[in-house]
Length: 188
Image 1 (tube, rainbow, N blue to C red):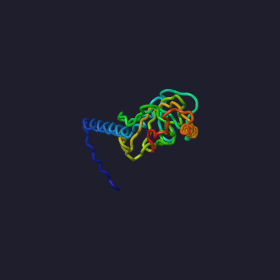
Image 2 (tube, one colour):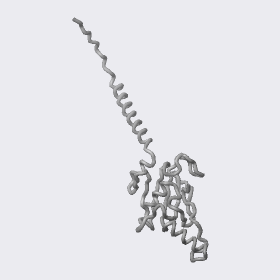
Image 3 (cartoon, rainbow, N blue to C red):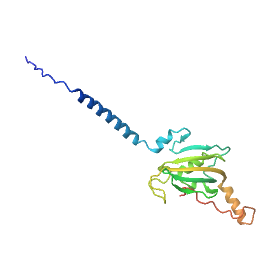
Image 4 (cartoon, helix red, strand yellow):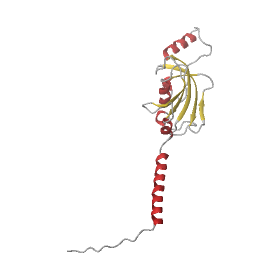
């Protein structure tokens, strides 16, 4: 038979318990702060009222609704646009309505254009994988989220535009000085 000798534990000072509880609370606050630090811009932005996130991760907000048809991959759009970085620095802006093929731009911009009816104005937030990814392009740093304000004025099927250009070159009716579509924002 064994005998167990009980060793009494001396009482802990109340101030130690208070410091222990305060330390645990401080650790919880620090852990919460670290969790929110990983909450990037696009995650926070997706929570704003009116911001829609597509399956690909493109985010957009309708600033002015339009009506009617929407462009497709085979169309040439006429837009006013301004591209900014998240710090507010403008990296590209149209000086006048600019024509370009829907597929002649980065994937996120192209996807956004196809969501817009004529006469609408949208704001796009394009994540790096739908923009330039890990490449730096001029004033755009690598892995940048791009913000564009885009106004869709009009669009035509590319084939119709080319026929109009051929008629103009052959002396047919057409706007003087009209040329081929230029490369738009995020051109490849």
